Amino acid sequence: MTSANHAGHVFTGGSGLLGRALRALRPDALFPSSAEFDVTNYSQMQDWAHSRNLRVVVHAAAFISPPKIDKDPVRALDVNIVGTANVVRLCAALGARLVYISTDYVFRGDRGLYAEGDEVHPVNKYAWSKLGGECAVRLYDKGLIIRTSFGPETFPYEKAFADQWTSRQAVSLAARDILRAVDSDCLGVLHIGGPRTTVLEYARGLDPARTIQPLSVNDVPFAVPKDTSLDTTRFIREVAD
Image (cartoon, rainbow, N blue to C red; front, side, top):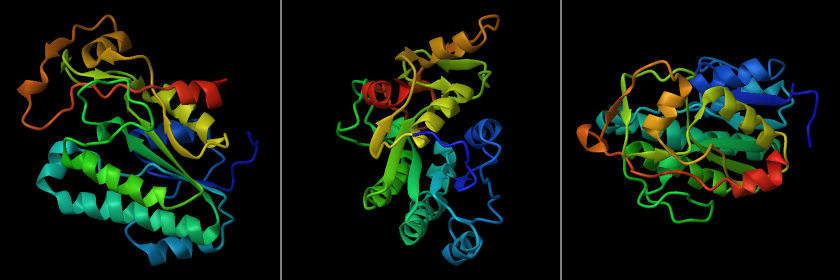
C-alpha cells in the first residue's frame, strides 16, 4: 500500500548512516534533528508533533556502538529503551503507525538464519538495549519491528571478521527494503537483509579491488555473536513481491 505523499511520515535518526540514505529516497518526509525531536524528552516530542499530522513514525535513532555502550550503559538505557518507549507513547497518543529499526544482534548467534519467532538472547549490552526497545514496541498494536544489519557503501575498515556470518547489506539496499516495509501493511516483526555470508565476504564484495584482511571475533575486546544471519522469507513473501 504505497502512498505518493509522505508528508505525514517522520523519521528519527536522520543524521545517521541509515537516516541519510532514507532521506535521499524520501525527501518529502519529515526528518527532525535530535535538537528538535529529542526522544529522551517526551514533552518536547509532544510539542513538535502538535502541529503536524503524523501518520507513520520510523524510529531509527539509537546509540549504536557496542564498545561505547559497554562503557556507558546508562546512555543506552536513556536513548535506546526510554527513548523508544517515548516514541511508542507518542504514536499511541496520535494513533500513528510505528516502525522501529532493531538489529540482528538480538540473537545469540549460535546458528544463524533466524526467523522472526526464534528465541532472542543478546550477547552484548548494545543488543540488550535494542531488545528493550523491541519490548516497548510490542506493547503497541500498530507497531512493526524491523531487524536488519547494514553498513556504508564502502567497508570502513582494513580488516573484517572471517568467522562471523551475517545478512548485512549496503545501507542503500537496506534503506530501499525498509521503505518497502514502511509502505506495506506489515505489523509485528520483520527481518530484512541479504544472503548469509561472512563479514569478510560481504566487505570484499563491496569493493573487490581492495585488499581487506581477515579478522577473528576472538581478536576484539567486546562480545560479538558468531552468526546472526536472518531468514527473510516473510519479507520476500509479503513485501518484496
